Image (cartoon, rainbow, N blue to C red; front, side):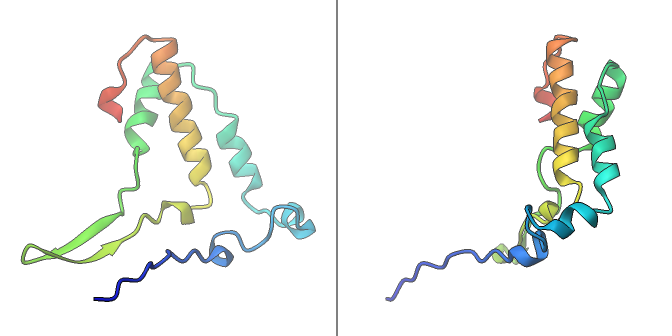
Length: 112
C-alpha cells in the first residue's frame, strides 16, 4: 500500500492579495478606518465585556465534519481567516476576557 504525504495548500493570493510592503496597500485599504476603530475600543464596563465575550466565538463556528450514516465523508475547514476583520474581532474578545479577569476577578472558563 502506497502512502503519500499530502501537504495542505494555502492560496495566499485570496487571503492577502497585496503584500504588506506593497505601496498600493497603504493607499487602497478601504477597511483601515474600521480596523482602527475596533483596535481603539476600550473595555471598561463588565456588561460590555461579557457581551463581547459571548458574541465573538472562541473558535470558528463554520468548521464542520460532514458525516453520513456514521461515516465521515468530508470536512469544511475553518473559514474565519477570510474575514478581513478577523484579527480585530479576536483582539477585541481577548481584551474583553482580560478585563473580566484582571479588573473584575471573574472566572472566564464559561466563555472559552
